[in-house]
Image 1 (cartoon, rainbow, N blue to C red):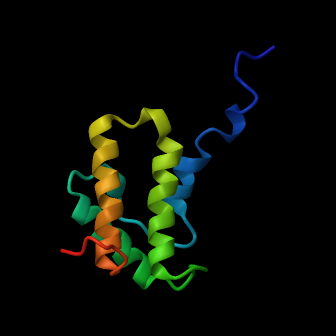
Image 2 (image 1 turned 120 degrees about the vertical axis):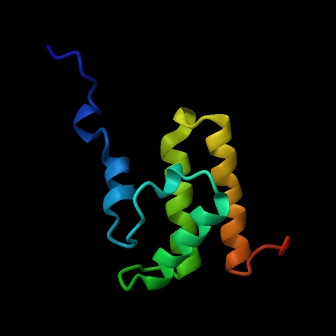
Image 3 (image 1 turned 90 degrees about the horizontal axis):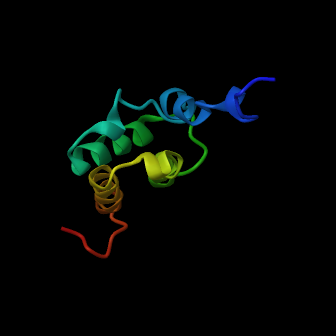
Length: 102
C-alpha cells in the first residue's frame, strides 16, 4: 500500500489555479512581492484587462488574493500574511471601496 494520502493526486491544484487561472493573467510571482501596493496594482491591472472573468474587476482581483491567502494557510509566514493583508486594503483603496482612502 502506498504511503501517500488520498489527497495526493490533487495536491498542487491550488498552485495551478494561481498560475493558470482562466479568469486572470497574473504576473509571475505576484504573491511573493514585498510591496503590498505593487501586488494590488498588478492584480487590478490583471482584473481590469481580463475579458474572461465572470465577476466585476474588483471582485475578481480580491477573490484571487483571498484564494491565495486561504490556500497557503499556515504555510504563510507572519510577515508574508501581513503584506498580503495590506495588499487587500490597497486593492480596496485602488477601487474606491475602502473607508480609509488615502
